[in-house]
Amino acid sequence: MCTYLTESIAATGSGKGANGWFGLNEVNVYFDHPVHAPADHTLNIDFINSDKGPSARVAVELTAETARALVKAIEATLAAVPAGIA
Amino acid sequence: MKESLTAETVMIAGHAGDEIEAYLAKPQDTDSFGGVVVIHHMPGYDTSTKEIARKFAAHGYAAIMPNLYHREAPGASPDDAAATARAKGGVPDERLVGDVGAAAAYLRDLPGCNSKVGVIGYCSGGRQSFIAACHLPLQAAVDCYGGGVANVPAQAPASMTPYIGLAKDLSCPLLGLFGADDQFPPPAQTAELSAALDSFDKPHEFHTFAGASHAFFSVDRPSYRVDAATEGWALIWDFFGQHLAS
Image 1 (cartoon, rainbow over the protein chains, first blue to last red):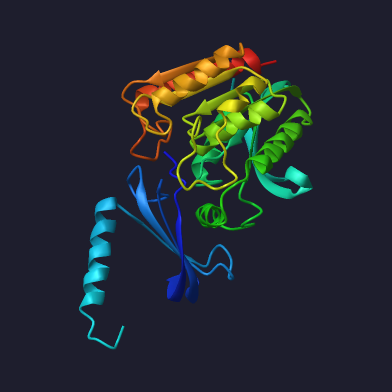
Image 2 (cartoon, rainbow over the protein chains, first blue to last red; image 1 turned 30 degrees about the horizontal axis):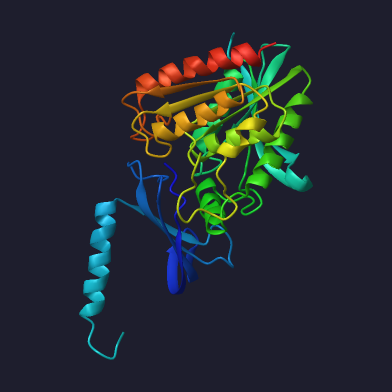
C-alpha cells in the first residue's frame, strides 16, 4: 500500500550525498514502499536541502524494527550527553 | 507477433501546457495499433515501470508513461524526484488528469494509432487510472490495486480526495485487479466500488487474487506473486485486446 504519510521537520546540520557534503534544511520521514531495501514497506528518511535541488538528499530505508531501534539509540545517546553540551 | 519495438524519451505538452518528459514505447511489426497510457507508481518514473511500457509495445500497443514528477524535479533520478514530489504534497488529481489526457492525445496522433486508448496504473497509479477514466474519453481502464476508494488515508495530501463519487462518470470499461490480503485497498472497499459502478450500469470486472497482497505485479519486490501476476497479465491482454485492438 501507499501510505502517503509524511512527517516533515526543519533541520540544521549536514549530510553527505552523491556529490559530497551539503547543509540540511529539512528531514522527511515516511513509511512506504522502498526503492532499494528488500521489503514491502520501510521507514524512509530523506535528509534534504530543498534549496539545492532533488539530488541534495541523503536517503535511508529501514525496516520498522531497525527504525524503532534507531529511535532508542538516538534517545539513549542524547540522554547520555553531559549537561550543557546538547 | 515478433515483439520488435522501439523505446525513447519524448517531451509532451502536459496539463496546462507544461512541457513534461514521457517514455514512449512503440511496436514495430504492426501497421495499426491501440494505445496505452501507463501511470507509474509512487516510487516514480522508474526502470520497472518503463519495463511495463515496453511490455505493452512488445504485445502490439503503443505505450506512453508521462513523468508525473517532471515539474518538481526535471532531470533528477526517479527516486530523488519521487522524494521531492512527496515532500511537496504529491501530484494533484487535476494535474494528473491533464497529464494523462495529454499523453492519450499524443498516442492518438501517432501514425498508425487506431485512436483507441486505454490507461493502466499500479498502486497509487491504480487510483489515478480510475480518476483519469472518469474525466477523460478513454476506451479501457485498468486499476491495479489502487487505494483510497471511499476514504483517503489519514494525513493524505489535501489535493487527494475520495473517488468513489466519480463512478457515475466512468467513460469506459474498467478492469480491477486486487489482492485478497491487501489492506489498501481491502476487499471490502473494492466491493464498495464495484457496487457503486453497478448502480450506474458501468461495465467493469474485478478480480481479487487469493494469496496476494499489494503490488503483486512487482517482480523486483517481495510482494511479487507469480500466480496472481501471470493470471493478471492474461486478463489484461484479453481486456485490452477486446477494447483497444484494431
